[in-house]
Length: 183
Image 1 (cartoon, rainbow, N blue to C red):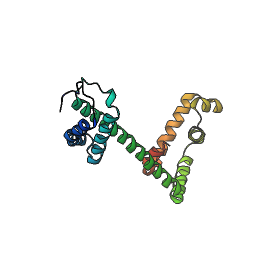
Image 2 (image 1 turned 45 degrees about the vertical axis):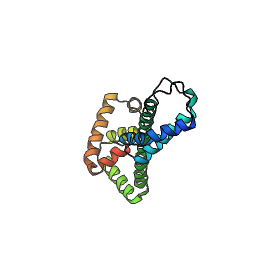
Image 3 (image 1 turned 60 degrees about the vertical axis):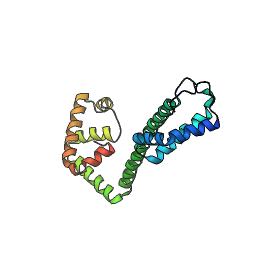
Image 4 (image 1 turned 90 degrees about the vertical axis):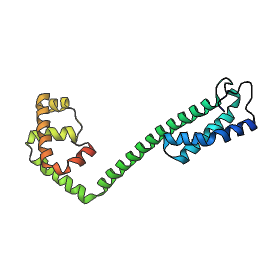
């Protein structure tokens, strides 16, 4: 039934006829987009509910079939977008769980802290001080340079050396540092 509604109002018998004629095809069309039949059926049902609730505002010159398929396509695209957002939020929660489990594993954390302290102790004093001011006190290079009365380039050189040394000394922990944003 691809004809426009032309001068016909959408009454209950015509709506039922449209539903019976197009529902299965719309579900199949939606399934091709969302790859989930339950979601596709839900989307098709919502399109028909929307059609019924807004029957007075539908352009009688427009094809009902075109309206239905366009509505299903748009709702499927919205569903896919929302699913991506949901999966992203779930991934964020999983990463938080990993961070929490890392934080709650005191023995592993103590071992890591000991390794960091040991690695930092291998650095020359000024180099270690610059690293600690940057990473542990969140100071900017400019502020470190002013406080230690050295140039910003010297601060950069100390940081470069410190990071290189720490990467070498703590290479087995490197993925964890990347995850936590420490190096």
